Image 1 (cartoon, rainbow, N blue to C red):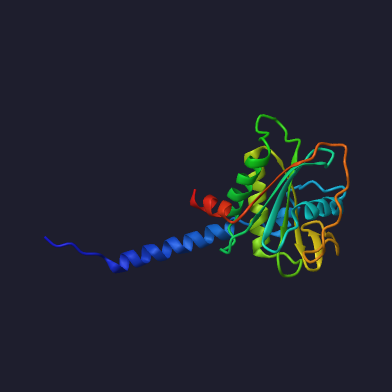
Image 2 (image 1 turned 90 degrees about the horizontal axis):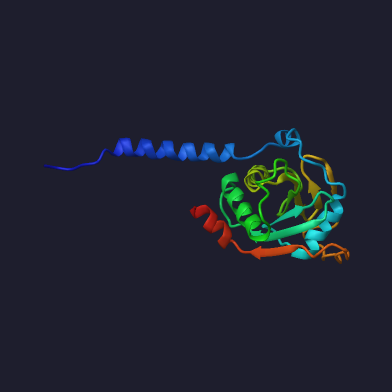
Length: 208
């Protein structure tokens, strides 16, 4: 009795798997028009939110900051982590964001209607124009919010040119990825829970 392999069949299967994986990765991102049509709630004072997160986490390029705001737009929790160098994939980003949310704040899945909102600030190189990486972050944020019982809020990029709320057209020159952090305004509310992590979080998320 002899055993053998069918190289042509194996090769075809592998090629199909890679093609399917690539197609799924492309599907796990949102175009700007899709994001704008999703009814994402507008921030009343986006610069204040951006400045506060920038001062607390001092992000460098490839740093993502996910923050949870209460109905009055006060910061309740936030966490930052480094995006590892890999292809942009909304599923991986969703898992990383969800892991951070679970670390810093309880879920709201028992509520019929979400009352808290999660926003994402991503510091990156390049200009403020939308990229496929941004689309993957948008997809990941929306899915993570659904799984944690939160409203999906703004997606904000931070570059050398300043900050930009994608899908809204609002932005400013300060803070930027190069600017020093501004002092955080004092508040009567309790200090928010914050956390930080490295790319290990993304590696663990990808392994799940």
